[in-house]
Length: 162
Length: 164
Image (cartoon, rainbow over all chains, first blue to last red; front, side, top):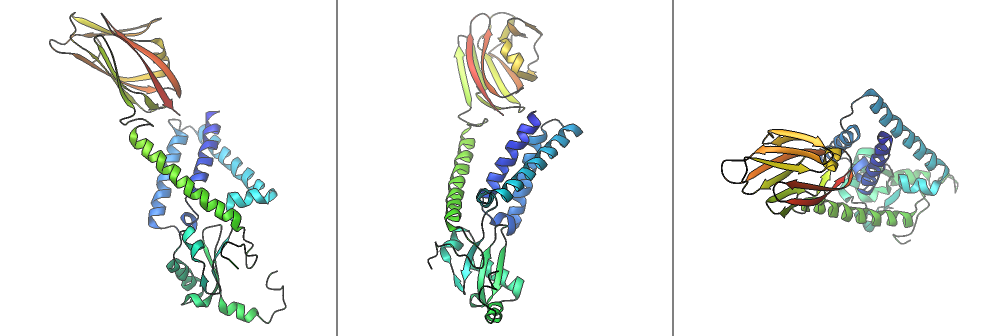
C-alpha cells in the first residue's frame, strides 16, 4: 500500500517542482539543469525504493506512475482548462520583430536565446527577421520568420489561420 | 494590442492563465526558499532547532526532536556522578516499539526487555560521568512521547516528531 501512496505523492511533488521551476528547465536545458534533474531523479528513486529493492515493489512503483500518467493525459484531453494548467500554454515573446519584454522577462528568457533559436531553426540574423517567436508549452522556442509570412500574404484570408 | 492581451494567432494564448502561472511560480520559489531555510535551521532534523537536551536529577538526555523515518539518529544519555558499580538506563516500551536500535556505545553489560521497557545496565566509569550514545532508526512516522529513566534518580519525558 505504501508503495502506491509514496509514488502518488512523489509524482505530484515532482510535477509541482518541475512545473513551477519554469518551462525553461524542460526545453532549454543547460548543463546545470541536467545535473539538477539527475539529482532530483536520484533522490526520488531512493525515497521511493527505500530499502525494498524487490521486483514486486519496483513493479508497483512503475505501475502507479504509468496509471497516474494515463489518468493525467485523459484529464488533459477531456478537460481542456485543466489540461492548460497541467501542460501550460504557448506564449508569444516576439511579435513582428518586436520583443515583448515583460513576457520574455517573466519566462526567464533572454533575447540572445530567442536569436539563437532563430539562427538554429531558420538561419535568421536579427530580431526584425522574426515574425513570431513562441515559447511553447514544451519549453522550446518556435520561430516563424518574416519571409514565410510575406510569401503567405497572397493566400486567401483565413487560410493562414486554419 | 497590449502585451498582457491574449493573441489568437499564430497560437491561441491564455495570458490570464499564463500570468497566474507565473505568479504561482514566484510563490513556489519563495516557498522552496523557506523550506530550505527551515531545513538549515533544523526543522527537518539535524540542526539547531532539532537538537534538544532535557535534564532531571542525574540524567541529561540529548536527542533530535525532529527525525526522519528510516534515518538513523543519535540520542545521548549522560548520567552524572554514578556512585554504584553499575548504572541502569530504562527506555519506555514505546521506544522499542517505534525505534530500531542500530548501536549502543558503550556496550551495556546486560540488557533486558520487559513490560517496563528496555533496561540497559552499564559498568560505571572509574571517574566522571557516564555518557551513553544510542543510535536508533525510527520504524515509522508520527509523534512519539517517550520517557527515559536512570537509577537512582532521574526521569525525563521527551517527544520526537518523525517525518515520513
